[in-house]
Length: 412
Figure 1 (cartoon, one colour):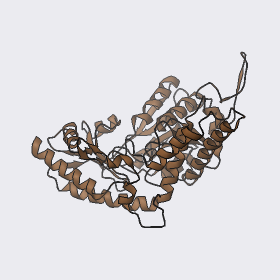
Figure 2 (figure 1 turned 45 degrees about the horizontal axis):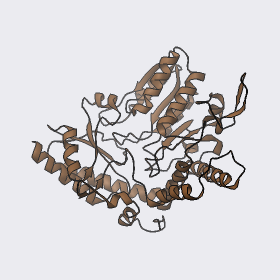
Figure 3 (figure 1 turned 135 degrees about the vertical axis):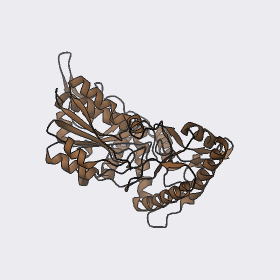
Figure 4 (figure 1 turned 45 degrees about the vertical axis):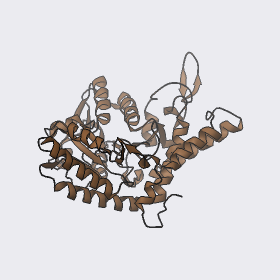
């Protein structure tokens, strides 16, 4: 049975829910510290997907037979669960996408076609993942608009005075990450949204790194768009959610054409389906949606309060222990941080450090983390990134620290 919010958080019990954490890597028990890239999956999620394929597999919205109706019910129940999870006003504002990247591309493409014109501006931050840069560059190039960037200070925080200066009447949309995948910085998105709305400017929030760590209420934030991926929140790959306010979604044209997103089709003209189906062309990832629902249920069974408390303790412990290593430099020391530790060791390339850690059974991410402009800002080639989840324990941290010490002894 999953751990419930009513009892004390037991990380060792939680770890047993994740099959891959019981395996080894290079002959060593695995210390998985790359959850920001993709999290592990509890057996509840794996079982939900398997059960769907064994017992309910059929296409949705298209069959009068019982199996199709059961699959449709499962799919739409997952949508309603996602709606409730982020407190969206209506399920028709919850669109299933392949992940956060597709969610951003959908908005950049369709919002751009309808609302961007020559001379307009799109405002992003200097810590964005490439998936929240490149789609907007493409939209700007297509419409003759300009991409502007909110700068980042040495701690890895947005310079809010510069944001306000850049927020002119030329800006038609702001796109910003809730939590930096590289730095762990938690951005003041509520403040960003409020200031943008004072000028009538909508805001898209990339929530991929926030959802695994904190409760998100899109109505409280007043976000116009909020998107996240299942695979970073202990669910399957290939599924995610785009929330959008109905007023914007109704104005934006469809993203793709095909089945389900239509109302009527003739060779002369097509009329489009109502929300959310207007943006869900073709057969969706039904099993992925079922798995996402199971992941949401699992997170809620533990509770964000317990998750935050455990991860904050691990983050503080990890930073303190690593700080004892001579020559270490942390990249990203924001006052408000999620459980990401990005660092370099003087004189050692991050790739070399990551390779040695791999041989010791320790999985970390090395490189630019799909944030090349941010690496340029700090004048570095990349970092070693240890990203934590609630299934990590202090032993994982201790192994990381000892691994770094061994690598330093070998490479210096």
